[in-house]
Length: 387
Image 1 (cartoon, rainbow, N blue to C red):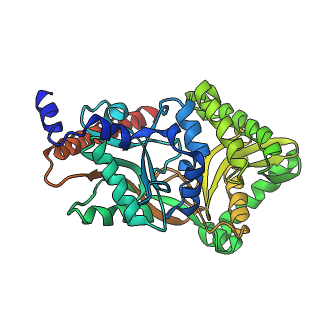
Image 2 (cartoon, helix red, strand yellow):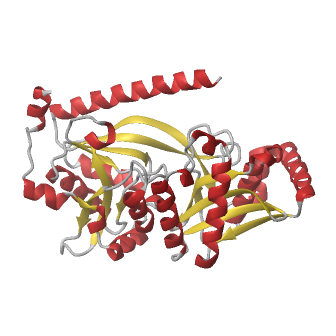
């Protein structure tokens, strides 16, 4: 540990520089943040201010994030923003690195101004150096996205390259296609016929309707319906439903209405008569939608309510000229959404070195590889125990 501490001090940052470089998330001007989000080179609904500030305020294990801000030459216009926490706080690793603050949704691509992407990325890296970090660890970033490309170009100017720690392909929707053609190509006529048969059987419990709540006056009740459905299923049994933890419940009840005020969130619900059988939360940023979470009434599981809701969401998004694509924000090989949304893009965890030939980066890399190995071993054990 003494050796680690000595190596970490190779390029110390002054206390004044560190304080200026990394600031509390709440210190970022919300108006500047919203304006940057509108100009972002790559959409990320989970780093919209109304969402991330709510997460950082109360969400379990995700509170009190900091930010690396980047400003233009006049130091007045925000051109980049990367919410971060320390490597110690993230994984109890005592090494000088900053990690992307996890915004509950599985996407941490930073906000980078499309009008000055290289300048913004360069400043974000410099701010990390000033904060005393020897590396950045970006979790769940779009590997081929515009934000990552800007960071790669900024790094290349210093003779540096990012290191991919892990990656997977995630399901996405091309919402510019015809919905019925897309669904037929994805599922095939036989599967669609079976799903229509199940929907007709669901109609025995009442007319099946799809609702999308967007207005601030309607989204509150729709959110409560979603929370009840989520807690009634397997997430409730495992203790991971949002409403089961006061901080998580406070976050989602703050974030969703706030985003509804700017038409950046909607709650979708599938009903059989008056009974809500499935509901989901969808964020919107620029021309992209983000399918955050899904809850179902498991009493109706035989009718595949989650799939039925996703089919309706697909039609809903394809019919919306404001939406060009949708991110499932789902895990790799997700059994429900992968067969329906056949688009794919690479998501991964990336280690970004901040100085050439830095021995501390090798220590950070080795610690993260060991951590990933331990997590994968634990996941395999859990899967075996559940069989």
